[in-house]
Length: 520
Image (tube, rainbow, N blue to C red):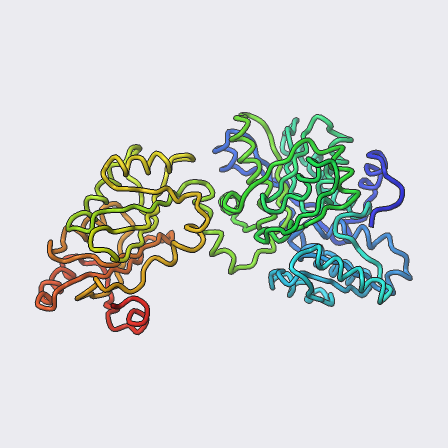
């Protein structure tokens, strides 16, 4: 809890310089993100808090707080509420100090973090959907069992522990031969990290901007600053569970209001793209909260058109559920707008599919790779297809949609449509009364231009494609599902077609899954 005495920046500077964090925490590296820096024409430095023993910066503040408790308090035990990273810091610190640790976590916490807390000896209690729900339950247990509460952000000792990150960054700049730091970007949940960083930066390098970063659906601090008072959100997005806080702290709000220069809000797709950017430069995977700062730097550069500046991004955590990587990979290209999605209407007639592919191959800027193609015959006059294409930069999807229309194909740009990105792309299909004489085959196509056109050019004119599903998986070969209407009398000719095509294939017409969900 915040102390009754309001600490000045000078008080915080002293607390940061004397913080006890290195009994358990390590001084993490400050590394240039070379590929990202080259792309942005600015120097981007990554503060690798994802490399802490608990894969998060939270260990610093938790241990500093607990190291200042009395022996009697430690003997009785501590309690905290956390979405995961602070919980691991408290559990590891308790083990180091020989204390009991009760940890209340939201039911939405990734299993990876729950298991990690238990691995450090913490007693896990699951309650509520967000940090705020868990906090209220922890407050009740604190009084009931006489435990000491270790707040994840709204405590001067915790804030001071997190501030040691800024101390390291400024010291490490010298080792990199960098004299000036234009801004440091800091993810905000409850505000403990940015409070510690801002206090140190503004005391030592006041010319360096401190920029807070929040998700568009978890922006309690930004709204509070705008309102001039703490604002409680009705709900928070849970993609970045490490920053899913409905109400920021009293002390952290006071500090942020006085010391933080600006705020940047980023969305889910931008964070997914940033996770990929970090991976490209480090071969490490950070959690969504850990990528917020990188996403904000990209957005800041695009907005302010900066060149030649130096920015630091704190990679504050890497406790990522492995299963979530499927979602991240799916959305990263759209987040960077390296992929555009469209709903295209083409005439349901012979040759129209091939003509559409030819238009794709003649788009301005050179040939585009098709990243996704979903189609199921459903109307005798028109075909509606879901198409994904690579792009050469942001803002291009609208121009491509216009080009399709000019070429005679009605098109809707779905690149920024949440329903399309999240659900519809996986649901195109179903049974069709029009799909008579349909044979279903799985093909393995080489991922190279012209592979699909070869397939279409070898088909007999009276055969019709009634189903087509393809999604680029980043491999050398693409896996494609095709429904083809081939009269039974032409089975021999169809076999010859498959031989000429020379692509690996498996017929699935007898597959029970096909019969249940797709076959007329």
